[in-house]
Length: 267
Ligand SMILES: [Zn+2]
Image (cartoon, rainbow, N blue to C red):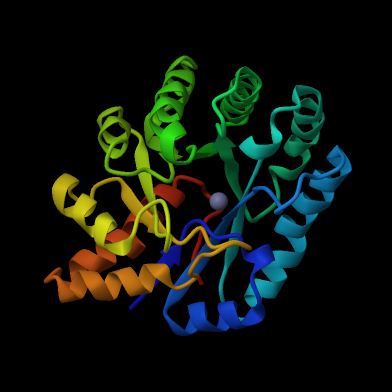
């Protein structure tokens, strides 16, 4: 088995996780910028985090033979403070040329507030001006449907955004259709308690087809499973999906999307 982990917060994981992922066939890891489990005290905290994502973490992943890529932004949970967000956005461009940076993410909404929406629009504009791919986080539970609608509107309101260069992550049964119908890519997050379970993700693949869909573990400091993609692949095989069909979803699809960034490559 081979797979690409397109969404994992490895700065919060231990080296044993890298060993297990490498041994399970992980060919690349992509790490969106996100919350740290606490609110950072200043924009300098984000500057240090971007150094960690673009310098230290790729070296740590390389020790296990895994190429490491990242996405940069101020995440939705910390974008209520528009002034802080403007400071962080002001120095993101100086990191965009780094060899492992794929684009802007994971941007989006958390509580669907007016300030979050303003910061989301600032990120979309930044991505458009610098011709970057976009990775979008969608809100949890009861906020997801409205937040997904608001996010799709914000993306469509920017005429320079091409939907095939944007992935909307954490989709569920009630949001995947609107994302795919609008021409965007959709990510399914495999969580033990919320978001998508492996069984639900496979149901979605069977209902919508595999095109423009990927799966990720979004593993972080909370309850999450770094090997949830290979575990879900085993479940797909058990349900009768061919090895080629599994490979298409867990390896070829992320490869197709991520290869739109010329810096993405596998060893
Ligand atoms: Zn995430």
